[in-house]
Amino acid sequence: MKYLLKPILSLLSLWLVISGCHSPQKIKYTPDTILPTDHSLLWRISGNGLKQPSYLYGTIHLIPKSDLAFSQGTLNALSKVKKIVFEIDIKEMTSLRTQFKLLNKAFMKGGKTLKSLLSEDDYALVKQKMEEKGLPSSMFERLKPLFLSTMLSGEENENPLSPSETNAMTSVEMELWKIAKKQGLQSSGLETAEYQMAIFDAIPYEDQAKMLVESLKNNQGTGNELKEMVALYKAADINGMQKIIAETESMGAFEDLLLGQRNQNWIPKMRDYMQLQPTFFAVGAGHLGGNEGVIALLRKNGFQVDAVL
Image 1: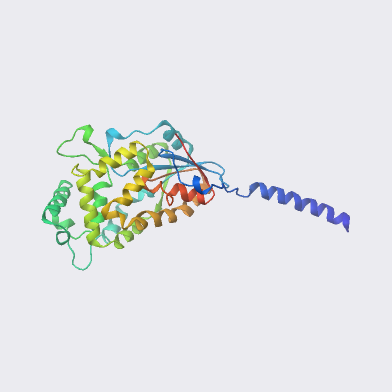
Image 2: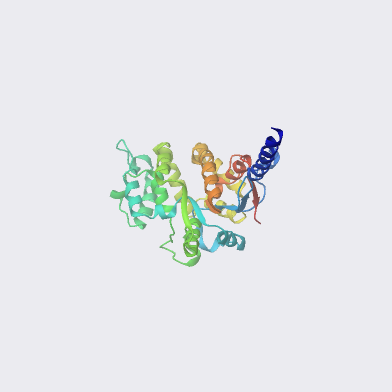
């Protein structure tokens, strides 16, 4: 009997060794190293069973073209991956089918109108911006303010009154999407457009209207937030960007809804993408910093996350 057991035990030992070699080895960070401190927009994700590294990149939804330049490290990272993943798949957002579906969910309920939510001056500002887009008030009056905000800042645009290259604006996501398409990368999203629309529904219309006006004033230079955000972005200060979002009067009360909960939801989805193939994640830079930011959460979940400087 003992001669029969010996090869069985040897095979069992060999199996334990082999399986141990393939089990995910989680990286352990001490509490004081969870928070990212490096100034970087690009981060390398490895460990925890990943066969190849993936990358995380912080974006900004609106930036002067003259202030945007991708580092060689970012371009190298894009050349090493098989897929690019945005907050919402750009391919989905540019689909007419998706846009029509969203339009049905874009209107305020209860007879609310934008004019009833804003002061006369603020309403005039929104009306001016929408008319520049070619949309008369009859078309946007009942749209949810955050939906309007997305329409006004979510795509490449240019100031029609001053159409010089220095005043041209773009979004980092769209510029990355152009590169990804040229390289033939697959694309996907961490959220759906319907989910983001559901977030809008959780924020009162009055607060949405305040966010819309704040965004427009800052984007046209009557406020300092956009300039400050762009300066922080160029300095790759992700913790500073997260802090300014939290301290913004209209958005601060909804920080957990707009940032915290979404960050938590993204981690298991990111894990699934990374286990299948090396992936380049492009999300708002304000999601990266802080103790509850994406970098800290990935580290808490056993991944090694390093700044690519």
